Length: 291
Image (tube, rainbow, N blue to C red; front, side, top):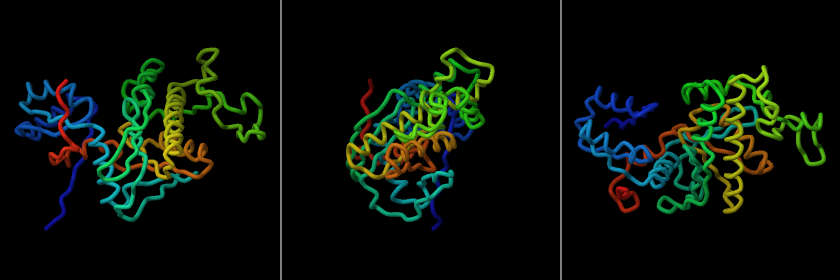
């Protein structure tokens, strides 16, 4: 008997998703398990235009279930980055992954303490997430899509926009352990306005680092709060973006003085979708009442 295979597809908007469903005759399904804000927002449209009832499942439960499945069933699913950007994969598969901190980065940020396969708690969060990053990109640059913004972030040089320690002191601030290339003030160079050497790519790179550094610091503080060693970052915001992962990894190493590391997942943007797909009708994944 051959092994089953899951296929993951991402869509930029609901129109693209609905067109995919029609193209592959998936609209013949009477219901689809779904989670997240979109499941609530577009429920009526799916029902009216496709005759599909979105079974709206609890987002946090789906996130945890999806993450637990990946960590306990798939080798080489999670990885961390070295200081040079090289990936180190978790090779073994084990049920002994608990407890851990799951930081899910969507429009906002949710921080969950996962104690076991059936026990978790949302312990913190932030309104400064992917939505903040993209909203500021729209206001400050000409980027027309999230994908374009993420691509530009890799090409940009945030030091053209950020004020570094070296810009203030002219060198390392050795007394308190700050190197000259550490960001002292995100977007601090723009105090006097946008200069000619600040490109859209530079601004987006600065915004991405600002967002990632803030999220990483929140994650580190919560890991300290609950005495957790393992931190996993997920959510569609990361999207295999090298600037995002390197910024988060650097910040976790920096604030923990090398005692902690950031862990990422290959399927980071599909945790909730995977958890919804795996839903079997138990109480833990019960349907969310209509609002």
